[in-house]
Image (cartoon, rainbow, N blue to C red; front, top):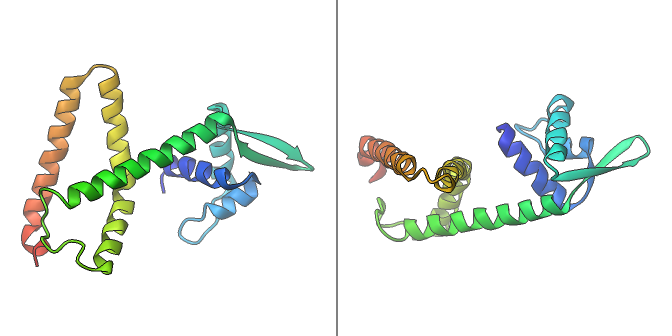
Length: 166
């Protein structure tokens, strides 16, 4: 898991209920092991510095919770992720289908959802770059980014097409 994924995951978990850094680290397990204090403390400090979380002191423990800005961020991120999921499903059922038998069983739907989950972070990263370029009026760079991604995808699909169609 990358630092960015930890940040978003921490915010999602804190949106469920306020909790201590220790409790949060237990919920942010990766490969079955708890996230270390050396990872969680800088992560919490970063989120606090960005104004996304705050804390109350209860005894010796700091109990972290989302700020209104953090709540808006999580709400918008949920909406963004759902929009991406919907668009990916729409495209998978529209043009450029490699598998004419896509979604013919519940297993296919499960596998498609797993693929979306595995690719979501990279897609969101690409969209963030595209958003930054678009916001700065860098349409040429955005066009180059899109062409590069499409070229790379085409090369990967072409090199694996015979295996994918089986």
